[in-house]
Amino acid sequence: MSRPVDLLYVNGAQQARMELTLPPEVPYRFAALPQNDTERILEEVLVRGGGRIERGTELVGFAQDADEVRAELGLPSGARERISAGYLLGCDGAPSIVRKVLGFGFEGAALPEEYMLGDVEVDWELPPGDRPPHQGPAPGDRAPDCGGLRFDLTAFPSRLFDLLRGQEHTVLLYADHPEQLAPYGELVASARSAAHGQLDAWVIVAPHTATDGLLLPVVRDALDEFRQRYGAAGGAGFVIRPDGYLGLRSSQVSGPEVVAYLAATFRT
Ligand SMILES: Cc1cc2nc3c(=O)[nH]c(=O)nc-3n(C[C@H](O)[C@H](O)[C@H](O)COP(=O)(O)OP(=O)(O)OC[C@H]3O[C@@H](n4cnc5c(N)ncnc54)[C@H](O)[C@@H]3O)c2cc1C
Image (cartoon, rainbow, N blue to C red; front, side, top):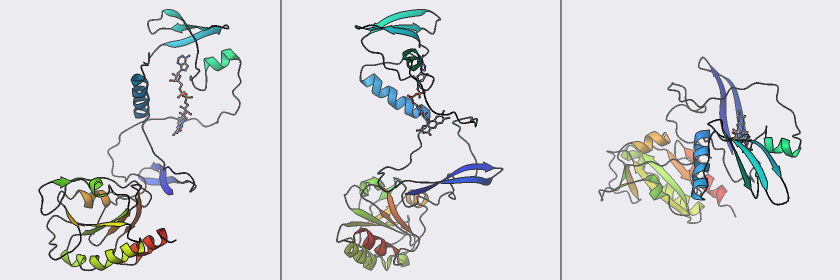
């Protein structure tokens, strides 16, 4: 999957950009997680296992014999503490005192460039990545969830992920005018046939769009969340893969794209 990543803007103009492409045998996508989230998750796992982090405590030296490791710690108060343990794990990063005391080298070269790293929240008009705001997910992106979907006959709001729970591909057809609904029945039949029957289909309509006579499962985008999160316009269609990622987005779903995509996916 290819996912564009913008690297640098200067005064609102894009200066540099990099395409990150994963080979097909890599089953994952790129993910960005702030370091504080990574640390929180790791710490929670450690605590669940009965461990704890003593921040500010430093390993300043150690020695080992056949029975144990004796270590000296520098405490945040400035005091020193001596402990002994069966094992010492050196997870202390590139400058590792554990590595140095044991006499191991650290081969490689240092990059000449200098970096400054910051986690910042910026309120600005530039789009995330290189997409205009509200354009929605691109093929290969995780399909976003959204709430506020209502069946006409029940009062319960549903989440989109409730509709995507099955193991099949799912086609979502969006409409904000009754006329757009006319070809949807035939389209879904062709799409199902291309997918050898392994396809779910939902029509998602704007809050006040009439659906009289439509013989397809319909939900109403009562809070307008679907339109906003998917950047959906009337007549648009989306194919969600069983792994929850977007396979295809089509601005005019009545064209051949959706059926062709499914035919290529299910070709035997
Ligand atoms: C600017 C920058 C950006 C990076 N971006 C990415 C990225 O986007 N994706 C990615 O995968 N990798 C990235 N890396 C690389 C990644 O951060 C490292 O490969 C990774 O953190 C190494 O993990 P580690 O557990 O071995 O060491 P570290 O993460 O360095 O952890 C070592 C820990 O040991 C502690 N410690 C050190 N000495 C002592 C001591 N004497 N006593 C007690 N505690 C001690 C340190 O305080 C630290 O908490 C980046 C690195 C840098 C510098």
